[in-house]
Image (cartoon, rainbow, N blue to C red):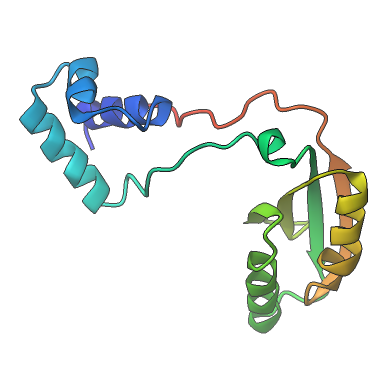
Length: 150
């Protein structure tokens, strides 16, 4: 990946709806080489997809929490069962496995505190292998969906 590919990626992270003509102009390439590079980046997996970034509040998800999960055991079966089960919970927007304690960080969005409590009690606390959950509430987003650095 060279500097031009990184410029293309930066521009698309800022505006994924650019036409190929607009993208080429922004990175100062002609359309054909820009299109070829774009296809290569897509084929090689540097660009994993395109999507709309939706404001959670616009769809009634006004409450966000970070939930830290510690598992009882970290054997392959427990990890697999936990990851499959947490993947099936729609209100879990992100889940990351961590080194050390806790084992996982979950980003959860719900309508309000009552909805979070219900999700916590009925789904999160019942995830396979969970020994302990701790939560912290998000006050505000300071940096959100920042493009990757060049």
